Length: 144
Image 1 (cartoon, one colour):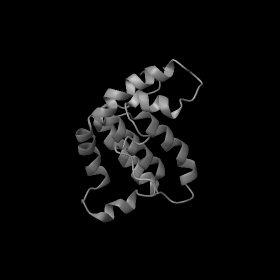
Image 2: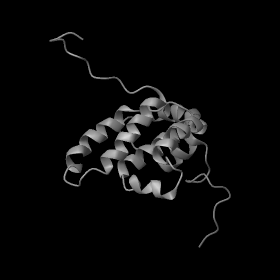
Image 3: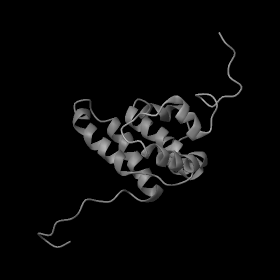
């Protein structure tokens, strides 16, 4: 990029190296002084939206675990366990990395796109995901 030339927005971070460095930033920023947190919140949210891991669950864990649990001690959790945005991203990334999700979600997405703006009912969701109970448990729990 030369002087005066506009640099385009960066594309989503590729691979798990980007995920690891992004998680380090999230952990460090979560421990910033309380006065700075409201200023950092929108930036950190935008940052998490940029990273989208495409690895399988084992590779994702191999990249994330050293960042979040560097000494493999319970005390490591104290640095980031209150970061709700990071926890939500981790849950989402884990679910997306599962083989079952990769197989089922594209078909479900295509099926639901046929009816934009209409929320699916429970029967339709069970049909799409091939479950017999709302939570997929079978046999159903005994009545209370």
